[in-house]
Length: 303
Image (cartoon, rainbow, N blue to C red; front, top):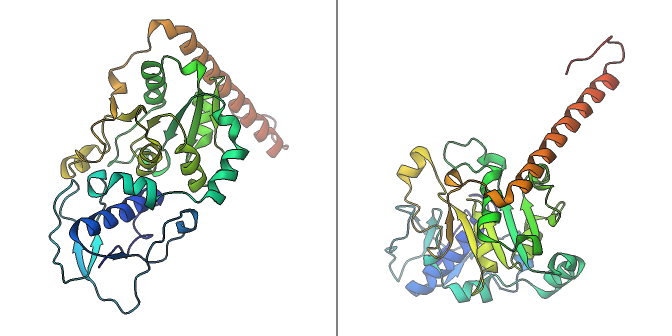
């Protein structure tokens, strides 16, 4: 039997999906059964995730390297896997998509019905990761230009699509992409709701996070275009962790550092910068007004 005892102790939802899918995939390949501790998100899926018996004893085995390799597991032993396990090569793709991570109808159907306006035409899901990735020495940094140039380069019909943004920093997305008339920002949605809605989109522009990876992977169809960053890691982390198996080879690599805004979109670029400048002035004035209200006894205020 295989398990992953640190399921909710080693990263958030994106990491957890990798741990589940890879543990199940490795177990099926090696002829083992599998089980897991309680998982807070299992109520959203049809799949029955077997529970680890209380008296079961496991041998702890740690991932040797970040990229895929053949785990040496004996048939007559129980193993507790430890690592990141971040590659689709570890699991059965159709089984994982269609069986393991199939959303319950009573969860996804009302959610899609309530938000059906998002799907009144073809969609591009844009997943923006901020949070602890910002200025982190381990993670490849993405500016708003990555998403902006990817929209323009790979989706010439973007004006006839709905651009759906999900993020852990929706305010950032609104600030940088609010000038798009066809943009929708999923604000106030839980991670699982974002995952479910995102998985029903047509095409994807994703960040280098595991959550972004899973939104696109679960939604991938035969004609889906998935645009991904040049890299997941940077610096020393990039040297120590070979990420060659993280992004599937079929996904499109977008190196925004080498991309310029096409001349035919100059008006849009000017509109975007005008919008950003307007937001900047608004926020500055709002902040000044706030300081005036907060400091009534002062003769002036600082900008």
